[in-house]
Image 1 (tube, one colour):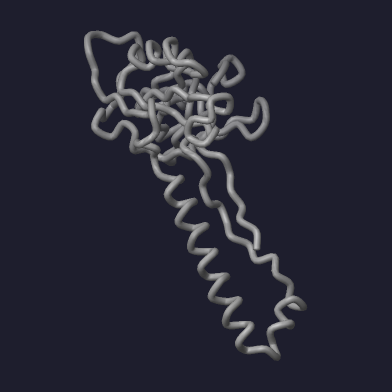
Image 2: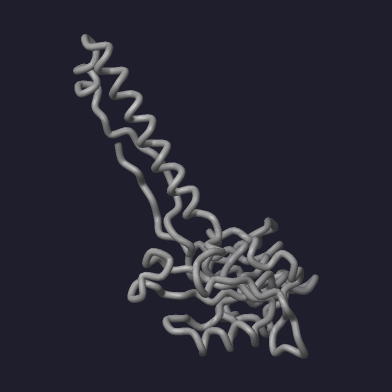
Length: 206
């Protein structure tokens, strides 16, 4: 059997479970019932252990040193604060990267930590979520192996660009991590998509 995983922000996440045991191999048990039963019991036990381990490590690593969610908002901010501070830290881990040209809501700011050198969180990268940019920036600058903050945005209407210069308006929810510097000037208004499509080649990133 083969357990397929991908590295996520708080450990390994199970993607799929594939059976690599061949039919010819299973044929070895066709004439030996007791052997087949013993093998089956061990197989199920092993699968249970693997699943339990992967599912546990796929949840937010609240018990890992340094991992936290900061939902506080204090003073003014250079960028939009989280639309719902109480939900910060509860959004999906797997989101899009950039794109869309416009955003509707700021959901949270994420500071990713590269832990390969320190072996924190088993050597797997993770992020800390914040409701306000300034807090995320301070944490990023004071934490070893931390990257600059990214912002998680929700897009309800956005621009799909399957190839450079080919723009398709979309109306469906999309969650994406953006560079914080992309926020100014890209908050969607009722006329943003229409105006963009009139002069699409003049637009720049994201």
